[in-house]
Image (cartoon, rainbow, N blue to C red; front, top):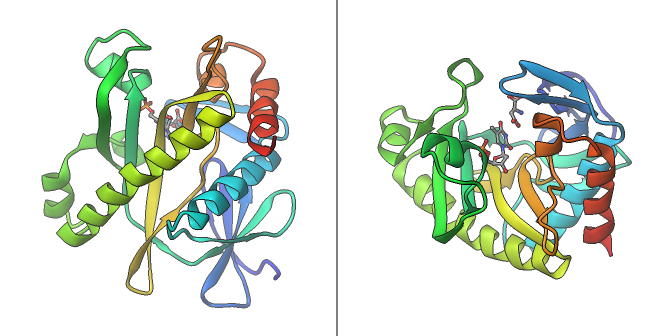
Length: 234
Ligand code: TMP
Ligand code: ASP
C-alpha cells in the first residue's frame, strides 16, 4: 500500500490517503510537543518506537475483542489504518493521580484512586482541550448518547486489558488518553497508544518511563521509550 496525498499533519503524526478509499496511512514522527506545543522538541526514534508499541497494543486489544482502526504495520514509521472520522473527544482514564488531575484538584501525584476516573476532554487545541462531561459532549453534538455509552464502556475494558498487560511487563499504567473514530456506522479505537499517550511507571522504582520525562525535562527520554519497547516486546 502506498501513500498518496497527505491530508493531515498533527503534532506527532502525519496522515495520508492511499489508493483504497477506506484506508489511510499514519506516519509516526519524532517531533514532541507539550503544553499546547509551547514546548517543542525531538525525541530520537520516537516515531519508530511508538509505531511498534502501538502495533503491539492494538494487536493485543483486537485479540481481546476490541475493535480498532489498526490494519497492519507497514514499515518502521508507517501504519495502515481504517479511515475513521475522529470523534473530537480525548478520553482519559486515571488509575493513579498525576499530571492534570494533580494540578486541577491540588492532589499529590502518586495517590492510587479507589476506582478509575474517566474524563472527557474536548479535542480543541485553541481551548487547551478543556475538561467537559457527557452533557457538554451531547449539547455540542460531539457524539450522541449511544456513542458516548459505547466509548465509556469500551474505555474501561481497555483500561483493564492495558493495566494487566503492562503489569506483566513490570509497568504501572498510571493514566492514558484514547481517541475514537467513526467507521461505517461503528465506533473504533483510533490514534495511537504509546508512551506519548500513557503515563507508565516502573513497578519497582516508580521511575517515569513516558513523555513526562520530556514535559518536565527529566532527561533520559530516548532510553525510557526504548525501555518501554523492550518490556512490551519481551
Ligand atoms: P493529563 O494528566 O495531562 O491530563 O494527561 C492524562 C494522560 O493523557 C497522560 O497519560 C498523557 C495523555 N495526554 C495525551 O495523550 N495528550 C495530551 O495532549 C495530554 C495533555 C495528555
Ligand atoms: N501533545 C500535547 C501538546 O503539544 C500535550 C501533551 O502531551 O502534554 O500540547
